Picture 1 (cartoon, rainbow, N blue to C red):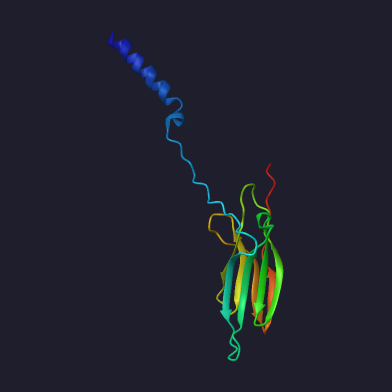
Picture 2: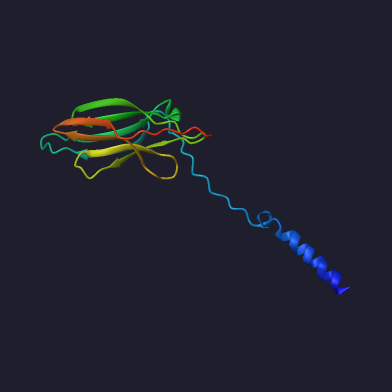
Length: 152
């Protein structure tokens, strides 16, 4: 009789160990917090620094504002150096399905210099454009591009 109990326990133990992943606790990754664009006209991010003009209160300003199409990744970008203002459309790249990109600004070490980019919900800044003032002129140029590789 003890041999039968031993064989039964051995078979039971062997069957329970044959699929170790089934009984192990499942690990779930916490999904990134999905960003929802605010209503049109809302300032999403802004970088502002006063110009050296002692007579006027002028600023170097870079401001991202939401639009009616912000869910598609289209925003308004205001660039200003003193009284000179220029507004352009900022279009963020296409990303994976279900992820809404959040536009962001990142100041640089230069006096009137910042980067325009985005976050995909993981708080990582992805640079797209550079904005700086050079000899009184605002320069706005693309520095990087992003694209999704097709799945195979």
